[in-house]
Length: 453
Image 1 (cartoon, helix red, strand yellow):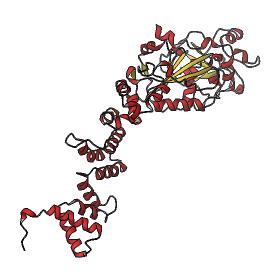
Image 2 (cartoon, helix red, strand yellow; image 1 turned 180 degrees about the vertical axis):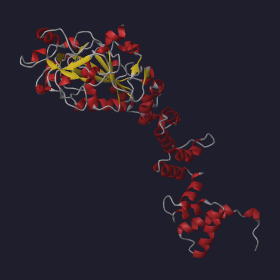
Image 3 (cartoon, one colour; image 1 turned 180 degrees about the horizontal axis):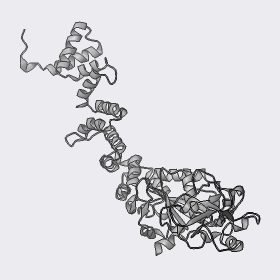
Image 4 (tube, helix red, strand yellow; image 1 turned 30 degrees about the vertical axis):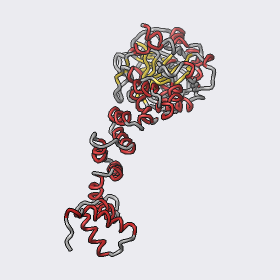
């Protein structure tokens, strides 16, 4: 009997047959194989799904069938994207997700958008990732989207969420998060009274010589700074320069040059905008990348820096000078005839007309040098500055590498390497003593002096 073509649909017939196979109503093996072959020939989804199960992940036929299925089914598109992402091929992973994000496709599911955004972040394109997340009706309220907006400094998005009547229901964490991280200019919905102080050390800041406020451009960096400070809470330096608060600072308001292994440079006039709110002596700003350094009461470091790097840089606030070679024409290496800091003095040449008493008076550590420790060494009949190496265990006047790139000569109180040469090293006992002595003439002036100029 012939079946009129108008009443027969091959697709419908195959779908019905595979349903019977799945429910056990059709058990004939020959028919099963015939239907499977016919289904594969006509790219029928059931046949592709059943056949795919015969192959291992990554096999050539598994890959071919998954690609066919991924064209129309986002579940397989996600599986294929995860497969390529696992092989490190992020671009291919995104290509299989992209068709499900086009305007011709109805609202993409959160799973597709979230995975695509995460892959985009791996490619270091955070702005593109944010575009997808922020436009999705569900994902825009997720904490990951808000955190990314904060990292990018897109405060307009935060304002939109706070203005939305749905924000409290869909993002109940939002006001607490914003209050905790201290905007320097809070959205109107977060009042000053809502801000929660986050003291990072238990000591009374009022008893400290100096205080410092930390800033970071993302919530993750804020948490990292707090972890660093917690690890350093018993360090002697933090009893002199006390951390006050860790606050959020949108990267969008900064104007900084940030390059790997190059000192971070910023337009510091921006910090004058909130000098009424930030009353600490110093600022410390963590940025995504760049070389750590201190400039006139402001410390810059990046998220790769360790707690030890932080200690080295904080030491500059209280007058400790680098003992590694500084660049040519560095200000420290100018022959001023005065100590450059707590631990370094610079002379124009390696000999001086000063007598012992005059020389000791110039050294911040002069009071700790024994009367029996010489400050000169005889070389080829010449009296040169520098305690002889045979006094290695004493406090004296020892060569420092600080100015070897300059025509001047730098000296330090002890011969061994310290944390001002290699940040991984401990702070020597003498340096701790100097830190607590009456030598605060070397302390850097407040950042307010800098931004007010």
